Length: 243
Image (cartoon, rainbow, N blue to C red):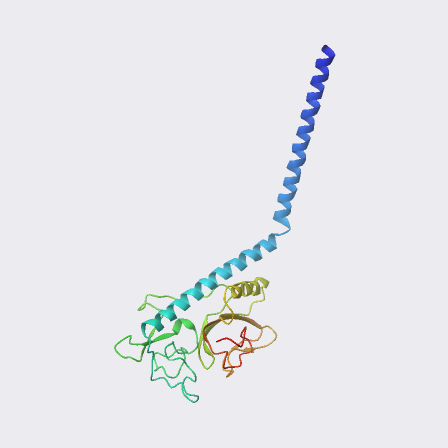
């Protein structure tokens, strides 16, 4: 009887030791997995986080710009019929219901900007007593404000001409996640709604009249409000059959 009890106790101790060993091995395996997750993919995690932040920031600003322009078009459907959008006019091919390029010579001094930065676009319409009055879309008087561009990007710019109406943003930074962010964002849009222009090998024209370009060494994201790709030769548009 004593021997039987002794054997039972020995078996119990052996079982407990075996169980303890299993727990120790499991703990070691978990620690190794946790260590690996912190060490090996840290750069990938950072890149993924940066990509996500860039996509979110860009997408938010695209929504802001589009809604502001669309509100202008809906509110003043006649636009500015005094704009000369003939082939030799101040704004060849421009859509008169949409904001003109901020540096359009149709705009009088004091209204005209020195560049195409989108925060300076003006809404053509009955804004201040005149059917052809152009008032800034973004600013204190409108209550709409254009936030600074996302980190690593230049200011959004605007085009209204022969090829349609679009706005674009550019980066000359070489961080790999930037290209990934632009491609992911492009996937959120339909064909001919947006496109990514790779000018890392040299400047790429953004319009068929070669008046604007994605600068050499840069990546650009272009977002369309109106695309005339069906009638124009636009090399960088996703699908030239857009209508």
